Structures are given as structure tokens and as C-alpha cells.
Length: 264
Image 1 (cartoon, one colour):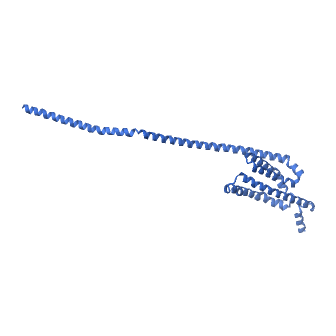
Image 2 (tube, rainbow, N blue to C red):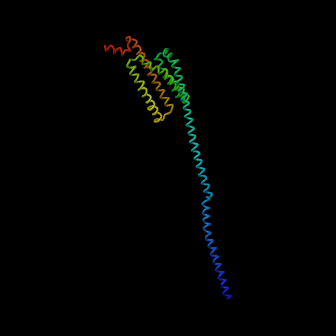
Image 3 (tube, one colour):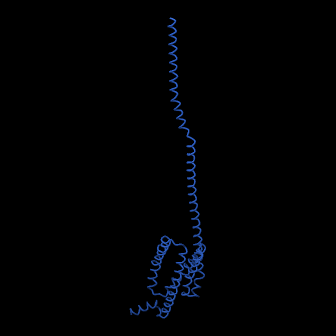
């Protein structure tokens, strides 16, 4: 009985120890996945030091680039605004001065020039001014010279030259006054603007890529040709005046008188 009891205690104790060991082993097995999950979660949630630095550098680079682009965009807008303000002020003062000088020349000087010099000599005034202005620009290329030259040129064009252009038709025939002059004032003048803008300016700027001095040299040459044409126009005008003075009274010129005699 005693041996049986001892064996029974021994068996119970061994069974108990075996169950405890199994329980501890199961606990360790259950604890291992939990600790692995925690480690995985920690690794996923906390980036490494190298990754954090790379992410910070990339963010700083992106912010710097965005800031640089915004600054460049702001500078471009500021430049465009400053350029627009300068051009507006320049052309406003330029055309205001041109209109003022044109009115003063027309009111105070044109009639006196035509009376003292006559039409033939007065025809040389504007081409000489144009020649001097563009020759100065050929030597001294700056905005001030351009402004002075163009102000003088346009002021004379709107006053003296405009009056001379109409005065040249006074001794001509009726057909020249009402047909040829109308065609010149409309079609020929506008075609001249088109040729100057699309032909000469576009060719020299867009195609040949020439600068301001090339324009100045071309205008000096054109002003010299203008002087030759002014001399010829003056001689023709004086001849027509003399022919009309010798013609019959009441006629519009030698052409009209000849037409009247032919019809008779």
C-alpha cells in the first residue's frame, strides 16, 4: 500500500510537472507571435534615421524649388508691370509733345515759312531734319536721340509737310486735284504704311535680325533720296505755276485750256 501510494504521488507529481511544462511552453509559443507583431508594428511605425533624413531633404528641396518658381514668377510679373508703366509714360509724353509742337508750328511758323521761302525751298526743311536726326542716331545710339529725332520729324510732318503736300496740287489740273490726289491720299499712303511695316521692318527685324544702326543707315539713305525728289517736285511745281500764269484767264491750267480748245 505504501509503495502504491508513493507511486501514486510520484505519478501525480510527474503529471503535474509535465502539464506545467507544457503550459509554460504554450505560453512562450503564444507570446512569441505577439512580440513579433509588436516588433513589426514598431518597425513600420518608426522610420529609420536615414529614411527620415532623406525624406526631410526631399521636402526641403521641393519647398526651395517651389519658392524659387514663385519668386521667378513674381519677378516676371513685376518686370512686365514696370515695362508697361514705362512704355505708357514714354508714349504718353511723346505724343503729347508732338501734338503740342505741331499745333504751335502750324499756328506760328508754317505761314511765315511759306511766305518767305516759298514752296520750293520749304520742301527741303523736313528731309534735312530727318537726315540730321537719323545721322545723329547712327553716331549716338540711345533713346534720348531717338526721342528728339522722332519728335522733330513727326511735328514737322503733321504741320509743315502736310501743308506742303496739299499746296503742291494747287497749280495742277482739275483731274489731278480730284482724282490723282484722292488716290494718293487713300491707297498710295496706306500701301506705303503696309510696305514700311510688313516689308521693311519685318524683313530687317525678323528675317535679317538687324539692329538700330541698320535702321539709321537705311533712313539716312532714304532721306538723301528724299532731298533729290524734293528738288524735282519743287521744279515741277514752279513750272506748273508759270504755265498757269501764262494761260487764259478763268482756266484751271494749261491742260484744261487745251481740252477747252480741242472741244471747241
